Length: 110
Image (tube, rainbow, N blue to C red; front, side):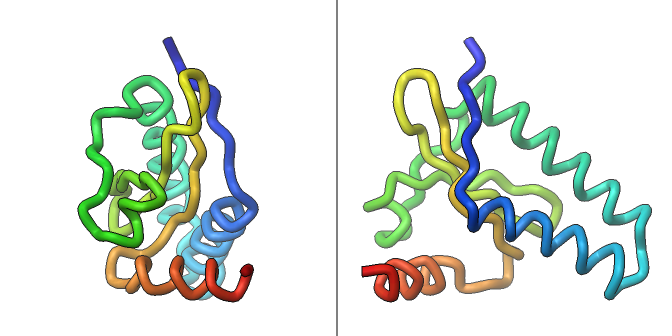
């Protein structure tokens, strides 16, 4: 059974910004298209096999039950919402301190 995929506003904006950066700043529309296709393929994999990735061991991610799916040099963070839906939470470059960024964002939202 395929899960329904929901995206947070942050995750949508993260993905758009990554594709925009690769296409415009790096002047590589072909690489941008390849990344977009890789993100789409990752979502299909997550949709079909959401439990294939374990919940993160990083404490701040673990408390949110986030899982990491690598996509090229990026990490797609997601969680299983219920028996029929998953949420794509954020998308980060693998060199970013994404646990700290998530904690800071949550602290400013409070």
